[in-house]
Length: 286
Image 1: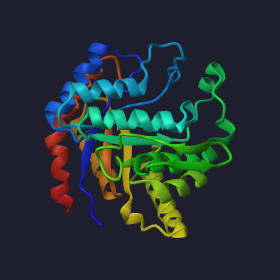
Image 2 (image 1 turned 45 degrees about the vertical axis):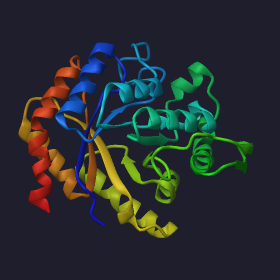
Image 3 (image 1 turned 180 degrees about the horizontal axis):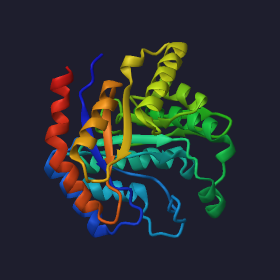
Image 4 (image 1 turned 135 degrees about the vertical axis):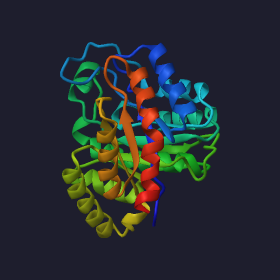
């Protein structure tokens, strides 16, 4: 099953101004990128500490929906433990409607210990079980008139969730996963597997592992698109094209370039300049 090669840009919402965010969104929409992303954290992450400015990921997606006309939008990836699945499903449907059906629904088990300690979020020790139940519930809320669920962590009784998403049966589900248990959830539920990262050799090994997991749960691995986000220093265009080509040869057809650094808006413009060359890889390697 062949999947088209698509490219996106990501502005995380961390250590960035609203003006810069809007500039990145404009570039993504006007330059012809396929998708546009943020992330989902409440405290800044990385080596320089947790006190840098950061904006909330789903509020940003609503703004992205209004600021753009054609590019698809999403979050790589939503931390499941931060929200009840009913709230998350409602947020997703709202953004899907605001965008006219352009939402890509990204979700993962969450991992940032500091945020759970800082804000008192429970569930990090049970994050995989919580994600498993959330995926089942959210799919039901997206598609069923009433949702009933009696799990270990969540309990829903005749839950109503209207309106339903514009996209049927629901927006594409991107699951970020690398561990054994979360890979099994991804194999069962995902339209797109968001690989946590790594150089081409590491990614190749993870893909082989995921293919085996798909076989174990009875899913054709070719049905699941593979995504990856990576950074570029903005210096050597050939290096970006070469790296993208290596990932594409491994079957990574959803590629997201992160607009980091002090000037993410300028970085988005630089990536946009390389986009035509990146797109030509599909024809060369077909």
